[in-house]
Length: 121
Image (cartoon, rainbow, N blue to C red; front, side):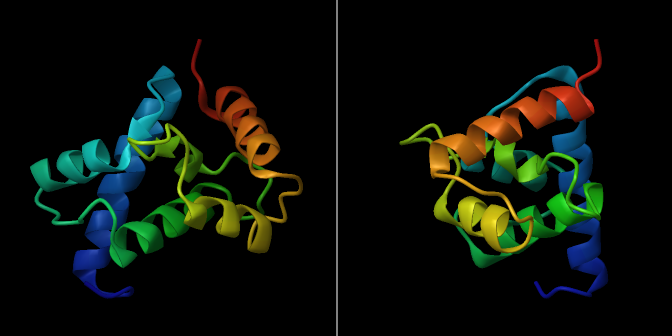
């Protein structure tokens, strides 16, 4: 699956809907494998630990925070083993969203932003 194709755009839209709903409901974190399964249930084969998953998470984060001021939706997606996001999240946070600090600080701040920006009371 390549960026810019209708298949990719459909998977991106499905991922955005899943993550936005979970963000609004405070239903996070979600493991990569669970997100992969939810996407599969909607007809999108996106392996949990794949380049496609990384690209989609980055694109959904940019889609929902075009200027980088809102929370990165990808912050809620975590590794089963560690219970925190993978290395790609931290790289994206620093390089494309300008987040500062160590991993714990970056993720903690994003989780606060998620609650502030998306959570419906």
